[in-house]
Length: 268
Image (cartoon, rainbow, N blue to C red; front, side, top):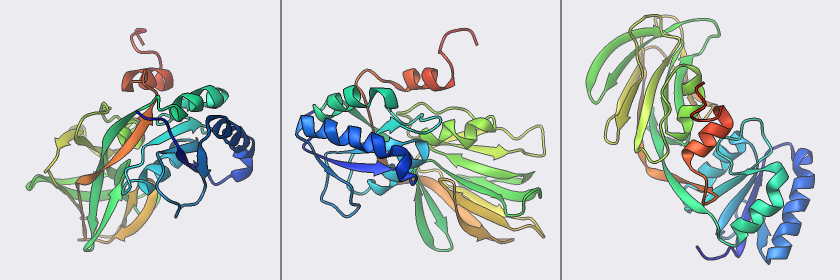
């Protein structure tokens, strides 16, 4: 890939926590002759640099969906599974990025239809109880086939990058980057028989709140989008948009998976 001439910068909301990192970034960009922009409405950039964790990465991936700018992260968060560079390696890692030494992984997103409006999720969509501590009853269908009503705390639809978040903590499978699929997992189902499903493109998931007295809530990438009253439906499918995650050339899904969740192949 050609070297970078212009880079957009995205940081998390606690600006003072990354102020020193921003200065390190400025110096690295100056040495490489790269122009930095911090404005959301700025001209297109060759790459977006994120200083933060996975939450900031999601915000940046969503922001650059339409323009197709690849997003690479320097981890100043807690987990940082979606980031490619550790904070201590900011200078050496970004020097490589500015020389064009990175590759881009295209990842599927989710399309959420609710009350006639359309939303896009990079990570996941969750239909959950709107009342803390109260179980809800959800009717769900997959590809037009009704699979019944399930008492639970919620239902998660996740993309491959989202599969290592809330889905993983509820026992759902991890989807390797490169799969054009989503996983559907119940959160705390009140049964021994509810199992996660992996579905491909063109398959729609319809989720209806059948709880007689408990409202449900729809979350997109961790943000509460709307309430789902009794009888209302949310429809989820793979969207035409794809997020563009940038990584260093030697990094694969499995290297990141091993670094974050434990070494691969160590018998654990």
